[in-house]
Amino acid sequence: MAMKRKNYLLISPNFPKYHENYARALGELGVNVLAIGDAPYGELSDVLKSSLSEYYKVGSLEDYGEVLRAAGYLTWKHGKIDGVDSINEYWLELDAKLRADFNVDGVKYPFVLQSKRKSSMKKFYEAAGVKTARWALPENFAQAREFASACGYPIVVKPDIGVGAADTFTIKNEKELASFFDSGRRGYIFEEFIKGRIVTFDGLVDANGDIVISSSHNFIGETFMDVVLGDGELSFYSELEIPADLQAAGAAVLKAYNVRSQFFHFEFFRAEGSADGRIKKGDLVGLEVNMRTPGGHMIDMINYSFDIDSYRLWARVVAGAEFERPPARKYYCAYASRKYRFAYKYSDAEAREKLGGGLCFDEEVDSALSRVMGDRIFIFRSKSLDEIFNMAKIIQQKI
Image (tube, rainbow, N blue to C red; front, side, top):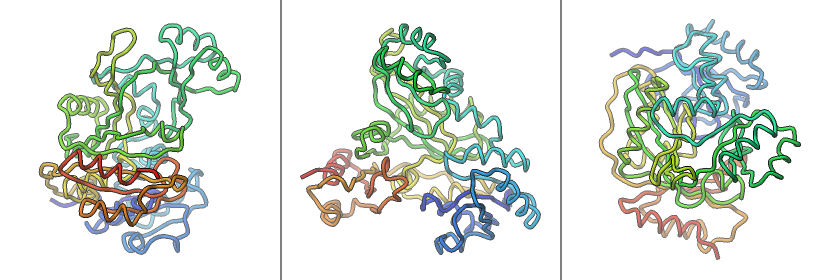
């Protein structure tokens, strides 16, 4: 089957560094890979340079007019753009505006806001039959106090449109509630506090909306929010088998959004219950929808757990080329980070030696991402979950 997409535009394909793999995979397939970014061409890696047909540097990706002109030039020179992607949550709105302006298939503006506004996500979760925490978008202190009276403290507060766990916190009492509104903050969603652990449903769907590959990740220690607030260490692992209720819930959300030819990353709580009894122990509660690649090396973890190259699989899907669905997952795969501010029992070299053949790779993290992702990360795998936990302990055990 001939490829349907020949000119593919990538936004900022150099950051984070592993994003160059998407350009590599498209280039290997024979796709004409175009790129717009704000980094000087000389700073791009040799792998990325060899994968791109043309790179257009702009002064700022925040300047949509400049990006629009760059995309117009690339269209004039290479012909119609068939696909646009940044593989990055921060630029999803930019991607969607370009798709709308150049009539490119995929999520367009303003529909993209339905997967960026947390209040809109709730409605799609509910349409999929997935429970959600009670929520409100209070415009003033009185409305917020009424919500707090109904749900009780603490209340989780976060930007209705935001990236990751940035600026997310809890309000524990009325004094803190009043202080929040005195600060002048607006545009925040208030949520009932649901105790539980976060589980993800991640994967890739084809042009028909059918799941090509799926995975689920669980935290070993702190969650992303815990790490952001406490500057701690992150560790999580991919399941060997996805629970049936999670697979069904994820598929229902995909259907509600009518997702096609792209990666997805959904977050749920495996709840311990709610105060009003509406949510039972063990229920899945919809938390967030992300219509983009799961971050934090989760794609690499999927690769090592299945023994495949998800970048190449993605490239074949988005280019409209033939592909094969991967075989069953073989391993648990995990991620554990270190922060340089801690003194560890084992040096990096000693940790590598102890992990032995279970270590997939380790590397230093860009400083712009290190507060959440860690200063150095280790990716490792095993067929035993107990061994996964032991390896995470070796990496993060303090003196």
